[in-house]
Image 1 (cartoon, helix red, strand yellow):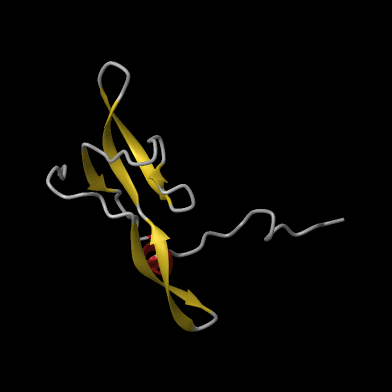
Image 2: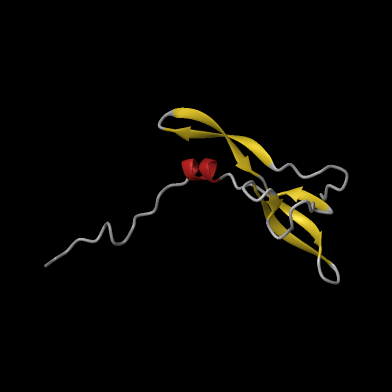
Length: 96
């Protein structure tokens, strides 16, 4: 769902596990953005560039016409449930 009536957030707080401790860090946002192209509108995946103070593919001060959150993939949850498959090289037995 496109968001037209709110500015896109530039950063967000995320909790990261480091050495058994939860650490809260500020992370640049990644969004799907509708922007004005040369002759028409275009849609891009854009990340906030804090050092430049702008969105990727946009000039400083330019904001997306509309945006939506970039979908997040629950990789950690899926990895915990997955059964690792045997790696052919690691399980190779030499008969030499």
